[in-house]
Length: 279
Length: 342
View 1 (cartoon, each protein chain N blue to C red):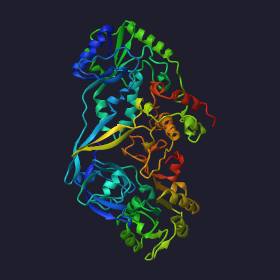
View 2: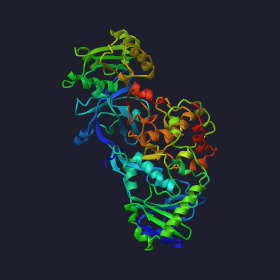
View 3: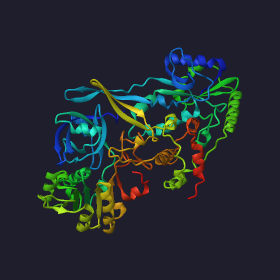
View 4: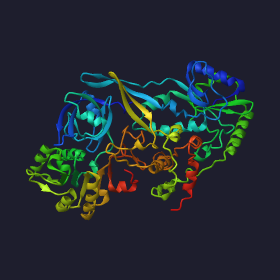
């Protein structure tokens, strides 16, 4: 019997400090055992439990795409016991990963459609995984037009800056990066994500939106997409809840009869409407 | 199906013989409580008792258990071993309601995807010998409302029924039949079986608590925002007694502890009644008050479990009714829900 509670051993091979406040870092992890990497078959949108023996576990969305084999990445904000310990770690340290857990962005459903990616703050991690997945040479033609709208409060709080730069030069995706308030060096857009969505006004035809961000951003962005003609079946988001087991047993992350860890974290708005509003 | 008749004074000796070969868990008097626990050498199980204060689920899903051991090294803290021990065990003197709880817990812990190896390993190694409730122990018993019964064999491998002058022993599963040899040669007579049927009928009649446990499901489906939820939680102390004594509650926490370079990852029972249960690092709590926590407890048992497994997650043992320090009565809550105006 496979033991889903035992993490795979991994080594931290690269740490990138993403933001000028230094409290968001991306950890690149490599599996110690080749066969574990093969078992860890994942899709964008899934998450894993980052496991630090002696500290505990923390459920974090996978920020890398399976199209980039050899490692997995997690972008983590320093907040509690486990994430603080993570932030104190150095490259070369051993730790554990349990997963992949949960469902994923609805890849099959997204195929052949125009994809609008909307992200806010550091909740851009599994969206970045999705973009990497779609931009992969072998995958790009499986998806239609890709429009990405990504915002943060300040330029220094944007994550994946180098990648945003690289994406902005591509002609097979449209990228709109915005900040609530720029600084003297900022040459890009200024404005809140909902406003930019309204300006960009992506067509709802054959289109699906995947959206992640702080609740306040989501609250004001959804009406924009309803106005643009997106149905609730074509807007997907990812939920967060306190989790422990990650496999639907420990009983704390349910929203109605669905467990966010097992049946989610990705839900369409139509699915969320059928659940209780307890998240 | 094998059936045996056992004389009244024989049963204790049989349990002792079984105990020589198996790890036996049974009801034992401990100070003022009757607890379901592992029989220590020389310790005698109770044959006449109402029910144990703690539910026998703890044999498969202990209050606290080590999952993983690890050790600190210069390169980081690494896995040392996985604690997955399970010995052949016999659970003797389980009540039918509690035996039924094992079937309900199997639905969760023994799913096709993601089996819980700690629960499943212990469960597979265990044989459940149930002592039927003739007579019914408590006025708070309501097993017949949730699909069980005082002489029901669901979840049992062996069912022992007191028929007055003897015990009728029925071996319900192949696992149970492995124990036939301990129970002597006296085959059950038709007369004994008739006596059992009569005892069962009488026991069912003794149960006066009847609640609409299945019937409230369609009402709960549409009552998440009903003002009713404002009426039940106010005296709750959030002590968690109801969930810790409940034979079907399965929520747990996972925590780490270290001493010097050695550490272990444990799982401990947790409770939806506790404020911290769902509180996130950010401070956000999707169930911010006892109201939402009570709604979760009731919904989980009478709606969510039905949605997911087509079973009510309550066996009608009455423990939460009897031991709640402020007399919150789940039977009354269910009864009240059945009368809600939509």
